[in-house]
Image (cartoon, rainbow, N blue to C red; front, side, top):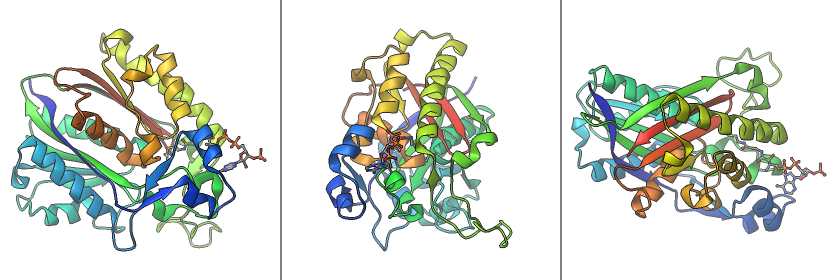
Length: 323
Ligand code: ACO
């Protein structure tokens, strides 16, 4: 039976850093409030000349390098993003051309906001298991700062930009053990960008391209759901909580991460946390955290990892992985 396995990881953060102190000069907030309520100290922000595809390309090249894989060996590209460079073609098409992958392989973007990378990993895993793809580039990339209302202190302190990538390859060994993907559109207005190109222009919010969020409600829902999906995933695949080597959660808020770890009875030493330095990078947050912990040597081959995320939609999902 064919499995898919992570062969390499990569990450990229734009150079420009925005600290909590920088934000103090922009909105009525304080470093103490942001750190206490979210755990965030700083985030990286794209410059005026950078785009989501630029970030994706850097992360992809790092992942390809670690995997020892040439771009032309890739036969599927999926980019999870909420902030594509263009309405069309997909950011994956732009990247395919940049990487000079001229083998006519399928490429597309997917949109599940912060759960996007977990969704993309689940989709790529299916392509590899059914034998139609041997090597996939799976990326989460965001320039979330471009859809933030920088006068709204309730959202502008939370988000950052970046990209994370993995090369997934066909293998006889088990790698991606299972992915569990969910959504419930009833909650879509708790966290959303109201405008979009397909909306009737007469809708009063058709041109509103900023993130709106009911933070408190999202918080409660996230804590509840992330604990449940972690337990659901371990149980459904015959693992105990104590089997887990690393939890790699979506990096939205350190209090949400701590609450999930408590539910799993997992010490924080076994949870990868990057939110203090990255903020919430949406679809990039999980693969960026994975890459950090792989490169600093915490995550070792053979270990059991649980990645999990939640986001607008609402969407939520998990991936249980033997690294
Ligand atoms: N600085 C100072 N005060 C602030 C700030 C700020 N940046 N933002 C809000 N406040 C104020 C509020 O106005 C409120 O004041 P009031 O009591 O006078 O009305 C007070 O702080 C408390 O506000 P709450 O919203 O109750 O604060 P809370 O402790 O819930 O923290 C936060 C807010 C950090 C947004 C939290 O609710 C949260 O993290 N929610 C989840 C958000 C999230 O994860 N979103 C991403 C989902 S993933 C995706 O798909 C993008």
